[in-house]
Length: 472
Image (cartoon, rainbow, N blue to C red):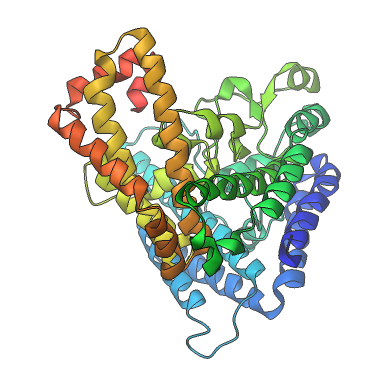
């Protein structure tokens, strides 16, 4: 592990006991105490580069005050433009920020765009109410008022997820501050249930990264190995990559659980990143609060089992970095300048790559995803529904195997970063996933896959629930 990885781990572990301290505190202590801890961590790890986050916050707040009815698009343009400047600092002869500054800036970008969207929704709801003369209907997810500058700063620097996620909305943050009877929200047992696989994942990460170091792929000797050995190597590299993030995100979730952050009654049907989807009245007494069943789906960032064992590339995206996936779906995918699912996905993956950084490997990897999505969608809708139940099970096993190999392949670009290293590795295995995806897409098109009726039939034969069909 690098010194930066040790620092991340220490920050994540420290956040757990801090969370227990803040859990039962009042709204004021939660707000300013959590902001003080987060700002302290930022100053300690980023030093003078903390100025970048402050400039981003002040710029976003100014846009919200100036144009509340259109601040979402303005905040998106501002924060993403600042990311470009932030990453070009070395080219401009300015001091290069630390990796921790980059991590803070990434999460802050998500939070500020989301905040602007929430303020815009509030402003539009108020205008609609004034125009109609009727009292507003459901207030689910709406803010009570526009946050002040100090409230925006406290949200931005809240220590929860400040470097590693999970992403959370301002509404989620407010609900934590104003949580009724926080002592009734269970923390220890959910934390232990969530944390137990992390040590195992950590050991597997250390073992796999030691036995199959990424640096070997950059050496000339690697390309003298037989083709099967080169093909196999991407499997343990992606395995180590997954184990590393599993540990980090589970630890980050445990920090939230310790603080009772993101806890909602199960009846609220909360979604990762978005929060409750159903109105759930707050409990009126400690006894009623204690009788409720709670979950922490709002801050759930990884579903390890489903990431590894879901069948489709499309589903693998949903279970990985789940709060960020919600953000991308809500603020990028829905407003994409295209109607096609594949083109919308390509637009989303392009901006996701840009959000991650300017390394070409990000773009080579993320922009391979739309090809895989198109291939699996066309071929599945053309063929799977024709098979017997036994044939569909065999299909799913083959589909799962190809899905995992596609992610192995794309991971190499994500970790190798440079164009030369990525293309050198991909060419050494003959761009196999690209050619397999193109072949599947061509076969699906030849067989007439992809029409709405066939797609619906294929989904129904998959045994998906009605709500899943609506989502598709």
